[in-house]
Amino acid sequence: METKIGLVRKILFKEYDQNQFVRLPIQIEEFIAPGHLVRIIDGVVEQIRMEELEVFYEGGGRSPYHPKLMIKVWVYGYCTRVYTTRPLARAIREQLPFMWLAGGQQPNFKTLSEFRGNRMQGMIDLIFKKVLAMLIEEGYVDLADLYVDGSKWEANANRHKIVWAKKTARYKAAVLDRIEGLLDRVRQLQAEEDLRYGQRDLEEVGEGKEVEIVLNSERVGAYLVSLNALIAEASADKVRQKELKKARTALVGEQGKLDKYEQQEQILDGRNSFSRTDVDATAMRMKDERLLPAYNVQHSTNNQFVVNYTIEQNASDSVTLGAHLGKMDERFEGLSVPQQQNLCGDAGYGSEENYDVMEGRNIKAYVKYPLFYQEQSGALVKRKFRRENFPYDEQADEFTCPNNRKLKYIGDRTDKSTTGYKKSWRLYECESCANCTFAAECKKSEEKNRTVRFSPKYEVYKAQAKKLLESDKGLQMRSERSIEVESGFGDLKYNLQHRRFVLRERKKVYIEFGLLAISHNLRKVFCEKSGIWAAYYAQRARKRA
Image (cartoon, rainbow, N blue to C red; front, top):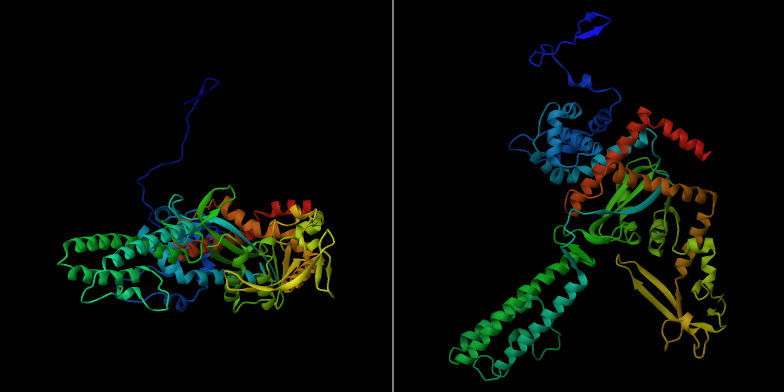
Protein backbone atom coordinates (compact mmCIF):
# COMPACT_ATOMS: atom_id res chain seq x y z
CA MET A 1 0.00 0.00 0.00
CA GLU A 2 1.21 3.50 -0.76
CA THR A 3 0.00 6.60 1.09
CA LYS A 4 0.02 10.08 -0.47
CA ILE A 5 -1.56 13.08 1.31
CA GLY A 6 -4.10 10.96 3.05
CA LEU A 7 -5.12 9.03 -0.11
CA VAL A 8 -4.73 5.25 -0.49
CA ARG A 9 -3.74 3.91 -3.97
CA LYS A 10 -3.59 0.20 -4.85
CA ILE A 11 -0.47 -1.08 -6.71
CA LEU A 12 -1.18 -3.40 -9.67
CA PHE A 13 1.52 -5.88 -10.71
CA LYS A 14 1.72 -7.76 -14.01
CA GLU A 15 0.16 -11.19 -13.91
CA TYR A 16 2.61 -13.90 -12.88
CA ASP A 17 1.82 -17.64 -13.04
CA GLN A 18 4.54 -20.24 -13.38
CA ASN A 19 2.02 -22.98 -14.15
CA GLN A 20 0.39 -21.42 -17.19
CA PHE A 21 0.44 -23.26 -20.52
CA VAL A 22 1.67 -21.94 -23.83
CA ARG A 23 -0.67 -23.50 -26.38
CA LEU A 24 0.61 -21.78 -29.52
CA PRO A 25 3.54 -23.35 -31.46
CA ILE A 26 6.84 -21.54 -30.80
CA GLN A 27 9.72 -21.33 -33.28
CA ILE A 28 13.08 -20.79 -31.55
CA GLU A 29 14.44 -18.91 -34.56
CA GLU A 30 12.05 -16.04 -33.81
CA PHE A 31 14.08 -15.31 -30.67
CA ILE A 32 17.37 -15.06 -32.63
CA ALA A 33 18.12 -11.53 -33.84
CA PRO A 34 18.65 -11.14 -37.63
CA GLY A 35 22.31 -10.13 -37.28
CA HIS A 36 23.20 -12.56 -34.51
CA LEU A 37 26.57 -14.33 -34.64
CA VAL A 38 24.92 -17.76 -34.79
CA ARG A 39 23.31 -16.83 -38.11
CA ILE A 40 26.76 -16.16 -39.60
CA ILE A 41 28.00 -19.52 -38.28
CA ASP A 42 24.89 -21.23 -39.61
CA GLY A 43 25.35 -19.67 -43.06
CA VAL A 44 28.99 -20.74 -43.37
CA VAL A 45 28.46 -24.33 -42.22
CA GLU A 46 25.43 -24.76 -44.47
CA GLN A 47 27.66 -24.08 -47.48
CA ILE A 48 29.52 -27.35 -46.81
CA ARG A 49 28.16 -30.07 -49.08
CA MET A 50 27.05 -33.26 -47.36
CA GLU A 51 29.15 -35.38 -49.73
CA GLU A 52 32.23 -33.70 -48.25
CA LEU A 53 31.17 -34.64 -44.71
CA GLU A 54 29.87 -38.15 -45.38
CA VAL A 55 33.38 -39.42 -46.21
CA PHE A 56 34.22 -39.17 -42.50
CA TYR A 57 31.52 -41.71 -41.57
CA GLU A 58 31.62 -45.47 -42.16
CA GLY A 59 27.89 -46.08 -41.94
CA GLY A 60 25.99 -48.79 -40.12
CA GLY A 61 25.08 -48.98 -36.45
CA ARG A 62 23.14 -46.32 -34.60
CA SER A 63 22.48 -43.10 -36.51
CA PRO A 64 24.99 -40.40 -35.47
CA TYR A 65 24.10 -36.77 -34.87
CA HIS A 66 24.16 -34.60 -37.99
CA PRO A 67 27.72 -33.34 -38.61
CA LYS A 68 26.54 -29.79 -39.34
CA LEU A 69 24.79 -29.69 -35.97
CA MET A 70 27.99 -30.74 -34.19
CA ILE A 71 30.19 -28.34 -36.15
CA LYS A 72 27.89 -25.38 -35.48
CA VAL A 73 27.63 -25.90 -31.73
CA TRP A 74 31.41 -26.39 -31.37
CA VAL A 75 32.26 -23.28 -33.40
CA TYR A 76 29.76 -21.17 -31.46
CA GLY A 77 31.06 -22.71 -28.23
CA TYR A 78 34.56 -21.46 -28.99
CA CYS A 79 33.13 -18.07 -29.95
CA THR A 80 31.58 -17.81 -26.48
CA ARG A 81 34.51 -19.26 -24.48
CA VAL A 82 32.90 -22.68 -23.97
CA TYR A 83 35.86 -25.00 -24.51
CA THR A 84 34.90 -28.16 -22.64
CA THR A 85 32.18 -30.71 -23.26
CA ARG A 86 30.05 -30.61 -20.10
CA PRO A 87 29.44 -26.82 -20.19
CA LEU A 88 28.72 -27.12 -23.92
CA ALA A 89 26.17 -29.90 -23.35
CA ARG A 90 24.49 -27.76 -20.68
CA ALA A 91 24.43 -24.72 -22.99
CA ILE A 92 22.72 -26.82 -25.67
CA ARG A 93 19.99 -27.69 -23.13
CA GLU A 94 19.54 -24.20 -21.69
CA GLN A 95 20.56 -21.41 -24.12
CA LEU A 96 18.42 -20.39 -27.06
CA PRO A 97 21.24 -19.79 -29.63
CA PHE A 98 22.66 -23.25 -28.94
CA MET A 99 19.15 -24.78 -28.98
CA TRP A 100 18.50 -23.26 -32.40
CA LEU A 101 21.82 -24.46 -33.83
CA ALA A 102 21.18 -27.96 -32.43
CA GLY A 103 17.61 -28.02 -33.74
CA GLY A 104 16.31 -28.97 -30.29
CA GLN A 105 18.51 -32.07 -30.09
CA GLN A 106 20.68 -32.65 -27.03
CA PRO A 107 23.92 -34.61 -27.64
CA ASN A 108 25.63 -35.50 -24.36
CA PHE A 109 29.16 -34.49 -23.39
CA LYS A 110 30.70 -37.83 -24.41
CA THR A 111 29.27 -37.54 -27.92
CA LEU A 112 30.52 -33.95 -28.19
CA SER A 113 33.97 -35.00 -26.98
CA GLU A 114 34.25 -37.88 -29.44
CA PHE A 115 33.21 -35.69 -32.34
CA ARG A 116 35.74 -32.94 -31.60
CA GLY A 117 38.66 -35.20 -30.71
CA ASN A 118 38.25 -37.83 -33.40
CA ARG A 119 35.65 -37.11 -36.07
CA MET A 120 36.72 -33.50 -36.58
CA GLN A 121 40.35 -34.40 -37.35
CA GLY A 122 39.56 -34.65 -41.03
CA MET A 123 36.86 -31.96 -41.05
CA ILE A 124 38.73 -29.03 -39.50
CA ASP A 125 40.67 -28.14 -42.67
CA LEU A 126 37.45 -28.33 -44.69
CA ILE A 127 35.61 -26.02 -42.29
CA PHE A 128 38.54 -23.57 -42.12
CA LYS A 129 38.74 -23.44 -45.93
CA LYS A 130 35.00 -22.74 -46.21
CA VAL A 131 35.37 -19.80 -43.84
CA LEU A 132 38.40 -18.59 -45.80
CA ALA A 133 36.49 -18.82 -49.10
CA MET A 134 33.65 -16.79 -47.56
CA LEU A 135 36.10 -14.13 -46.37
CA ILE A 136 37.60 -13.83 -49.87
CA GLU A 137 34.21 -13.78 -51.57
CA GLU A 138 32.87 -11.03 -49.30
CA GLY A 139 36.05 -8.95 -49.62
CA TYR A 140 37.40 -9.27 -46.09
CA VAL A 141 40.77 -10.70 -47.24
CA ASP A 142 42.67 -10.75 -50.53
CA LEU A 143 45.71 -12.95 -49.64
CA ALA A 144 48.14 -10.48 -51.26
CA ASP A 145 49.91 -9.13 -48.18
CA LEU A 146 50.51 -11.81 -45.57
CA TYR A 147 52.01 -11.47 -42.10
CA VAL A 148 53.45 -14.37 -40.13
CA ASP A 149 54.35 -14.82 -36.47
CA GLY A 150 54.42 -17.45 -33.77
CA SER A 151 53.29 -17.68 -30.16
CA LYS A 152 53.94 -20.25 -27.43
CA TRP A 153 50.75 -21.95 -26.24
CA GLU A 154 50.79 -23.96 -23.03
CA ALA A 155 49.96 -27.64 -23.47
CA ASN A 156 47.60 -29.63 -21.29
CA ALA A 157 50.53 -31.38 -19.63
CA ASN A 158 52.27 -31.65 -16.27
CA ARG A 159 55.26 -29.31 -16.08
CA HIS A 160 56.96 -31.61 -13.55
CA LYS A 161 56.98 -34.64 -15.87
CA ILE A 162 59.34 -33.43 -18.58
CA VAL A 163 61.82 -35.86 -20.16
CA TRP A 164 65.02 -34.15 -21.35
CA ALA A 165 67.04 -35.42 -24.32
CA LYS A 166 70.40 -34.81 -22.62
CA LYS A 167 69.41 -36.79 -19.54
CA THR A 168 68.05 -39.62 -21.68
CA ALA A 169 71.36 -39.81 -23.58
CA ARG A 170 73.35 -39.78 -20.33
CA TYR A 171 71.23 -42.45 -18.65
CA LYS A 172 71.32 -44.64 -21.77
CA ALA A 173 75.11 -44.39 -21.93
CA ALA A 174 75.33 -45.46 -18.28
CA VAL A 175 73.09 -48.48 -18.96
CA LEU A 176 75.21 -49.49 -21.96
CA ASP A 177 78.36 -49.30 -19.83
CA ARG A 178 76.78 -51.57 -17.21
CA ILE A 179 75.66 -54.02 -19.92
CA GLU A 180 79.19 -54.11 -21.33
CA GLY A 181 80.47 -54.90 -17.84
CA LEU A 182 77.98 -57.75 -17.46
CA LEU A 183 78.95 -59.19 -20.85
CA ASP A 184 82.61 -59.02 -19.87
CA ARG A 185 81.75 -60.97 -16.74
CA VAL A 186 79.96 -63.61 -18.85
CA ARG A 187 83.03 -63.86 -21.11
CA GLN A 188 85.21 -64.52 -18.08
CA LEU A 189 82.87 -67.30 -16.97
CA GLN A 190 83.19 -68.82 -20.46
CA ALA A 191 86.94 -69.08 -20.20
CA GLU A 192 86.66 -72.80 -19.45
CA GLU A 193 86.31 -75.18 -22.37
CA ASP A 194 82.81 -76.48 -23.03
CA LEU A 195 81.51 -78.70 -25.74
CA ARG A 196 79.45 -76.05 -27.51
CA TYR A 197 81.62 -72.93 -27.53
CA GLY A 198 85.18 -74.09 -26.95
CA GLN A 199 87.38 -71.01 -26.66
CA ARG A 200 84.96 -68.81 -28.64
CA ASP A 201 82.85 -65.93 -27.37
CA LEU A 202 79.05 -65.71 -27.31
CA GLU A 203 77.73 -66.23 -30.84
CA GLU A 204 75.84 -62.93 -30.87
CA VAL A 205 78.83 -60.89 -29.69
CA GLY A 206 80.40 -61.27 -33.13
CA GLU A 207 83.94 -62.13 -32.09
CA GLY A 208 86.34 -62.27 -35.01
CA LYS A 209 84.15 -60.07 -37.22
CA GLU A 210 85.28 -56.69 -38.50
CA VAL A 211 81.78 -55.21 -38.21
CA GLU A 212 81.29 -53.14 -35.06
CA ILE A 213 78.35 -54.37 -33.03
CA VAL A 214 76.03 -51.64 -31.69
CA LEU A 215 74.28 -52.58 -28.49
CA ASN A 216 70.51 -52.12 -28.29
CA SER A 217 67.65 -53.79 -26.44
CA GLU A 218 67.03 -56.24 -29.28
CA ARG A 219 70.65 -57.42 -29.34
CA VAL A 220 70.70 -57.71 -25.54
CA GLY A 221 67.67 -59.98 -25.89
CA ALA A 222 69.68 -62.19 -28.27
CA TYR A 223 72.50 -62.32 -25.71
CA LEU A 224 69.99 -63.46 -23.11
CA VAL A 225 68.95 -66.40 -25.32
CA SER A 226 72.56 -67.56 -25.53
CA LEU A 227 73.04 -66.95 -21.82
CA ASN A 228 70.06 -69.17 -20.99
CA ALA A 229 71.66 -71.94 -23.04
CA LEU A 230 74.94 -71.51 -21.15
CA ILE A 231 73.11 -71.72 -17.82
CA ALA A 232 71.44 -74.97 -18.88
CA GLU A 233 74.77 -76.47 -19.98
CA ALA A 234 76.53 -75.42 -16.77
CA SER A 235 74.35 -77.63 -14.55
CA ALA A 236 77.36 -79.68 -13.51
CA ASP A 237 79.23 -76.60 -12.23
CA LYS A 238 76.89 -75.09 -9.63
CA VAL A 239 79.17 -72.17 -8.80
CA ARG A 240 79.54 -71.19 -12.47
CA GLN A 241 75.79 -71.66 -13.04
CA LYS A 242 74.96 -69.40 -10.06
CA GLU A 243 77.24 -66.66 -11.40
CA LEU A 244 75.63 -66.91 -14.84
CA LYS A 245 72.13 -66.67 -13.36
CA LYS A 246 73.15 -63.61 -11.38
CA ALA A 247 74.46 -62.00 -14.57
CA ARG A 248 71.24 -62.91 -16.40
CA THR A 249 69.06 -61.28 -13.72
CA ALA A 250 71.09 -58.08 -13.89
CA LEU A 251 71.07 -58.13 -17.69
CA VAL A 252 67.28 -58.51 -17.79
CA GLY A 253 66.92 -55.42 -15.57
CA GLU A 254 69.32 -53.39 -17.71
CA GLN A 255 67.53 -54.49 -20.87
CA GLY A 256 64.26 -53.03 -19.54
CA LYS A 257 65.95 -49.70 -18.78
CA LEU A 258 67.64 -49.65 -22.19
CA ASP A 259 64.31 -50.31 -23.90
CA LYS A 260 62.76 -47.39 -21.98
CA TYR A 261 65.47 -44.96 -23.05
CA GLU A 262 65.25 -46.13 -26.67
CA GLN A 263 61.53 -45.44 -26.62
CA GLN A 264 62.19 -41.99 -25.20
CA GLU A 265 64.69 -41.27 -28.00
CA GLN A 266 62.10 -42.36 -30.53
CA ILE A 267 59.53 -39.96 -29.04
CA LEU A 268 62.06 -37.11 -28.87
CA ASP A 269 62.95 -37.52 -32.56
CA GLY A 270 65.45 -34.66 -32.45
CA ARG A 271 63.58 -32.50 -29.91
CA ASN A 272 65.21 -31.36 -26.68
CA SER A 273 62.37 -32.61 -24.46
CA PHE A 274 58.82 -33.93 -24.16
CA SER A 275 56.20 -34.28 -21.45
CA ARG A 276 55.05 -37.67 -20.23
CA THR A 277 51.51 -36.27 -19.95
CA ASP A 278 51.44 -35.14 -23.59
CA VAL A 279 54.36 -36.66 -25.46
CA ASP A 280 53.88 -34.29 -28.43
CA ALA A 281 54.46 -31.20 -26.26
CA THR A 282 57.96 -29.72 -25.91
CA ALA A 283 59.34 -27.70 -22.99
CA MET A 284 59.48 -24.05 -24.09
CA ARG A 285 60.38 -20.78 -22.39
CA MET A 286 57.22 -18.68 -22.08
CA LYS A 287 57.06 -14.88 -22.03
CA ASP A 288 56.88 -14.86 -18.25
CA GLU A 289 60.12 -16.94 -18.19
CA ARG A 290 58.36 -20.11 -17.02
CA LEU A 291 59.57 -23.35 -18.63
CA LEU A 292 56.41 -25.25 -19.58
CA PRO A 293 55.29 -28.01 -21.95
CA ALA A 294 53.95 -26.07 -24.91
CA TYR A 295 53.38 -25.86 -28.66
CA ASN A 296 54.65 -23.16 -31.01
CA VAL A 297 51.57 -21.90 -32.86
CA GLN A 298 52.36 -20.28 -36.21
CA HIS A 299 49.72 -18.28 -38.00
CA SER A 300 49.50 -15.98 -41.01
CA THR A 301 47.06 -13.10 -41.25
CA ASN A 302 45.61 -10.73 -43.82
CA ASN A 303 43.56 -7.75 -42.70
CA GLN A 304 43.84 -9.28 -39.18
CA PHE A 305 42.00 -12.45 -40.25
CA VAL A 306 43.79 -15.77 -39.70
CA VAL A 307 44.33 -17.32 -43.14
CA ASN A 308 46.74 -20.11 -42.23
CA TYR A 309 48.02 -21.85 -39.10
CA THR A 310 50.27 -24.74 -38.10
CA ILE A 311 51.19 -26.36 -34.78
CA GLU A 312 54.94 -26.81 -34.32
CA GLN A 313 57.00 -28.66 -31.70
CA ASN A 314 60.13 -26.51 -32.07
CA ALA A 315 60.42 -23.32 -30.02
CA SER A 316 62.35 -21.55 -32.80
CA ASP A 317 60.25 -19.74 -35.41
CA SER A 318 63.03 -19.97 -37.99
CA VAL A 319 62.70 -23.71 -38.69
CA THR A 320 58.88 -23.65 -38.93
CA LEU A 321 58.34 -21.44 -41.99
CA GLY A 322 58.87 -24.13 -44.62
CA ALA A 323 56.16 -26.40 -43.20
CA HIS A 324 53.91 -23.38 -42.60
CA LEU A 325 54.12 -22.25 -46.23
CA GLY A 326 53.59 -25.83 -47.37
CA LYS A 327 50.32 -25.92 -45.41
CA MET A 328 49.41 -22.53 -46.88
CA ASP A 329 49.74 -23.92 -50.41
CA GLU A 330 47.34 -26.70 -49.45
CA ARG A 331 44.80 -24.29 -47.91
CA PHE A 332 44.89 -21.81 -50.79
CA GLU A 333 44.46 -24.44 -53.50
CA GLY A 334 41.35 -23.64 -55.55
CA LEU A 335 40.93 -20.19 -54.00
CA SER A 336 41.40 -16.81 -55.64
CA VAL A 337 45.09 -16.12 -54.91
CA PRO A 338 47.03 -13.16 -56.40
CA GLN A 339 49.97 -14.04 -58.66
CA GLN A 340 52.30 -11.98 -56.48
CA GLN A 341 52.21 -12.46 -52.70
CA ASN A 342 54.15 -10.51 -50.10
CA LEU A 343 55.16 -11.96 -46.75
CA CYS A 344 56.26 -9.89 -43.77
CA GLY A 345 57.86 -11.35 -40.66
CA ASP A 346 60.28 -10.44 -37.90
CA ALA A 347 63.98 -11.28 -37.73
CA GLY A 348 63.24 -14.73 -36.31
CA TYR A 349 62.38 -15.87 -39.85
CA GLY A 350 65.35 -14.23 -41.58
CA SER A 351 67.43 -17.32 -42.36
CA GLU A 352 68.95 -18.34 -45.69
CA GLU A 353 66.71 -21.41 -45.79
CA ASN A 354 63.55 -19.34 -45.37
CA TYR A 355 64.58 -16.81 -48.02
CA ASP A 356 65.26 -19.74 -50.35
CA VAL A 357 61.85 -21.27 -49.60
CA MET A 358 60.06 -17.97 -50.28
CA GLU A 359 61.97 -17.41 -53.51
CA GLY A 360 60.95 -20.87 -54.68
CA ARG A 361 57.29 -19.92 -54.12
CA ASN A 362 57.64 -16.52 -55.82
CA ILE A 363 56.90 -14.73 -52.55
CA LYS A 364 58.43 -11.30 -51.96
CA ALA A 365 60.22 -11.55 -48.62
CA TYR A 366 59.65 -8.45 -46.51
CA VAL A 367 61.37 -10.37 -43.73
CA LYS A 368 64.09 -8.88 -41.54
CA TYR A 369 67.37 -10.71 -41.03
CA PRO A 370 68.91 -10.90 -37.51
CA LEU A 371 71.23 -7.86 -37.82
CA PHE A 372 68.76 -5.59 -39.65
CA TYR A 373 67.84 -3.52 -36.58
CA GLN A 374 71.49 -3.07 -35.62
CA GLU A 375 72.27 -1.88 -39.13
CA GLN A 376 69.42 0.63 -39.02
CA SER A 377 70.28 1.97 -35.57
CA GLY A 378 74.03 2.13 -36.15
CA ALA A 379 74.75 -0.31 -33.32
CA LEU A 380 76.43 -2.75 -35.73
CA VAL A 381 79.09 -0.23 -36.76
CA LYS A 382 80.20 0.08 -33.13
CA ARG A 383 80.91 -3.66 -32.97
CA LYS A 384 84.16 -3.34 -34.89
CA PHE A 385 85.19 -6.98 -34.46
CA ARG A 386 82.13 -8.32 -36.28
CA ARG A 387 82.88 -9.86 -39.67
CA GLU A 388 80.42 -7.41 -41.26
CA ASN A 389 82.78 -4.55 -40.32
CA PHE A 390 85.91 -6.17 -41.81
CA PRO A 391 86.72 -4.62 -45.25
CA TYR A 392 86.54 -7.25 -48.01
CA ASP A 393 88.73 -7.27 -51.12
CA GLU A 394 86.78 -9.14 -53.79
CA GLN A 395 89.74 -9.49 -56.18
CA ALA A 396 92.12 -10.87 -53.55
CA ASP A 397 89.25 -12.72 -51.82
CA GLU A 398 90.36 -11.67 -48.35
CA PHE A 399 89.17 -9.69 -45.32
CA THR A 400 91.17 -7.12 -43.34
CA CYS A 401 90.83 -7.03 -39.55
CA PRO A 402 90.97 -3.82 -37.41
CA ASN A 403 94.72 -4.44 -36.88
CA ASN A 404 95.23 -4.40 -40.67
CA ARG A 405 95.99 -8.12 -40.86
CA LYS A 406 94.64 -10.27 -43.69
CA LEU A 407 92.14 -13.10 -43.33
CA LYS A 408 92.65 -15.40 -46.31
CA TYR A 409 90.33 -17.99 -47.81
CA ILE A 410 91.04 -21.50 -46.46
CA GLY A 411 88.16 -23.58 -47.80
CA ASP A 412 84.42 -24.31 -47.80
CA ARG A 413 82.14 -26.01 -45.35
CA THR A 414 78.56 -27.25 -45.64
CA ASP A 415 76.14 -27.42 -42.70
CA LYS A 416 72.86 -29.28 -42.69
CA SER A 417 69.90 -27.89 -40.75
CA THR A 418 67.40 -29.96 -38.76
CA THR A 419 65.03 -29.69 -41.72
CA GLY A 420 67.64 -31.04 -44.15
CA TYR A 421 68.62 -27.73 -45.79
CA LYS A 422 72.30 -27.51 -46.78
CA LYS A 423 74.07 -24.18 -46.29
CA SER A 424 77.51 -23.57 -47.79
CA TRP A 425 80.04 -21.37 -46.01
CA ARG A 426 83.32 -19.81 -47.17
CA LEU A 427 85.94 -19.90 -44.40
CA TYR A 428 88.71 -17.34 -43.85
CA GLU A 429 91.59 -17.39 -41.35
CA CYS A 430 93.89 -14.60 -40.17
CA GLU A 431 97.48 -14.95 -41.36
CA SER A 432 98.66 -14.49 -37.75
CA CYS A 433 97.13 -13.25 -34.52
CA ALA A 434 100.45 -13.34 -32.66
CA ASN A 435 101.18 -10.23 -30.59
CA CYS A 436 97.90 -8.60 -31.71
CA THR A 437 96.71 -5.95 -29.27
CA PHE A 438 93.07 -6.72 -30.15
CA ALA A 439 93.35 -10.51 -29.79
CA ALA A 440 91.47 -10.69 -26.46
CA GLU A 441 88.52 -8.76 -27.89
CA CYS A 442 88.63 -10.16 -31.41
CA LYS A 443 88.82 -13.93 -30.92
CA LYS A 444 87.72 -16.48 -28.36
CA SER A 445 90.55 -18.99 -28.57
CA GLU A 446 93.95 -17.97 -27.24
CA GLU A 447 95.84 -20.46 -29.44
CA LYS A 448 94.05 -20.38 -32.81
CA ASN A 449 93.99 -17.50 -35.28
CA ARG A 450 90.77 -15.54 -35.84
CA THR A 451 88.46 -17.12 -38.41
CA VAL A 452 85.34 -15.78 -40.09
CA ARG A 453 82.79 -17.30 -42.41
CA PHE A 454 80.03 -16.10 -44.66
CA SER A 455 77.55 -17.52 -47.13
CA PRO A 456 77.55 -15.76 -50.53
CA LYS A 457 74.01 -16.94 -51.18
CA TYR A 458 72.78 -15.58 -47.83
CA GLU A 459 74.45 -12.22 -48.50
CA VAL A 460 72.51 -11.93 -51.77
CA TYR A 461 69.25 -12.75 -49.99
CA LYS A 462 69.96 -10.18 -47.25
CA ALA A 463 70.67 -7.48 -49.85
CA GLN A 464 67.36 -8.24 -51.58
CA ALA A 465 65.49 -8.22 -48.26
CA LYS A 466 67.08 -4.91 -47.23
CA LYS A 467 66.05 -3.29 -50.51
CA LEU A 468 62.45 -4.48 -50.06
CA LEU A 469 62.29 -3.48 -46.39
CA GLU A 470 63.51 0.06 -47.10
CA SER A 471 61.05 0.59 -49.97
CA ASP A 472 57.72 2.39 -49.47
CA LYS A 473 55.89 -0.94 -49.51
CA GLY A 474 58.36 -2.34 -46.99
CA LEU A 475 57.93 0.60 -44.63
CA GLN A 476 54.15 0.20 -44.84
CA MET A 477 54.25 -3.55 -44.13
CA ARG A 478 56.75 -3.12 -41.30
CA SER A 479 54.55 -0.52 -39.63
CA GLU A 480 51.46 -2.72 -39.95
CA ARG A 481 53.06 -6.04 -39.02
CA SER A 482 52.65 -5.85 -35.24
CA ILE A 483 49.02 -4.72 -35.55
CA GLU A 484 48.23 -7.30 -38.21
CA VAL A 485 49.72 -10.46 -36.81
CA GLU A 486 49.61 -9.82 -33.07
CA SER A 487 45.94 -8.85 -32.95
CA GLY A 488 44.86 -12.45 -33.61
CA PHE A 489 46.94 -13.84 -30.77
CA GLY A 490 45.82 -11.00 -28.52
CA ASP A 491 42.15 -11.67 -29.25
CA LEU A 492 42.46 -15.39 -28.53
CA LYS A 493 44.59 -15.09 -25.41
CA TYR A 494 43.02 -12.05 -23.77
CA ASN A 495 39.50 -11.64 -25.15
CA LEU A 496 38.69 -15.36 -25.38
CA GLN A 497 40.93 -16.15 -22.37
CA HIS A 498 42.44 -19.18 -24.10
CA ARG A 499 46.08 -19.60 -23.05
CA ARG A 500 46.22 -23.35 -22.45
CA PHE A 501 45.01 -26.11 -24.73
CA VAL A 502 42.28 -28.42 -23.46
CA LEU A 503 43.15 -31.36 -25.71
CA ARG A 504 46.31 -33.46 -25.79
CA GLU A 505 48.36 -34.73 -28.75
CA ARG A 506 49.45 -32.56 -31.64
CA LYS A 507 46.71 -33.75 -34.02
CA LYS A 508 44.01 -32.83 -31.50
CA VAL A 509 45.66 -29.53 -30.58
CA TYR A 510 45.55 -28.77 -34.32
CA ILE A 511 41.76 -29.19 -34.19
CA GLU A 512 41.45 -26.97 -31.15
CA PHE A 513 43.43 -24.09 -32.60
CA GLY A 514 41.48 -24.49 -35.83
CA LEU A 515 38.28 -23.88 -33.89
CA LEU A 516 39.90 -20.86 -32.22
CA ALA A 517 41.02 -19.41 -35.57
CA ILE A 518 37.57 -19.96 -37.08
CA SER A 519 35.90 -18.33 -34.09
CA HIS A 520 38.27 -15.34 -34.34
CA ASN A 521 37.46 -14.86 -38.02
CA LEU A 522 33.69 -15.22 -37.65
CA ARG A 523 33.56 -12.91 -34.65
CA LYS A 524 35.40 -10.28 -36.67
CA VAL A 525 32.86 -10.68 -39.48
CA PHE A 526 30.04 -10.29 -36.95
CA CYS A 527 31.63 -7.13 -35.53
CA GLU A 528 32.06 -5.67 -39.03
CA LYS A 529 28.47 -6.44 -40.05
CA SER A 530 26.86 -5.37 -36.79
CA GLY A 531 28.85 -2.13 -36.64
CA ILE A 532 29.62 -2.46 -32.94
CA TRP A 533 33.27 -1.59 -33.59
CA ALA A 534 32.56 1.30 -35.96
CA ALA A 535 33.10 3.98 -33.33
CA TYR A 536 36.30 2.32 -32.15
CA TYR A 537 37.74 2.05 -35.66
CA ALA A 538 36.75 5.66 -36.38
CA GLN A 539 38.68 6.76 -33.31
CA ARG A 540 41.74 4.77 -34.42
CA ALA A 541 41.51 6.23 -37.92
CA ARG A 542 41.46 9.76 -36.51
CA LYS A 543 44.53 9.05 -34.40
CA ARG A 544 46.38 7.56 -37.36
CA ALA A 545 45.44 10.53 -39.58
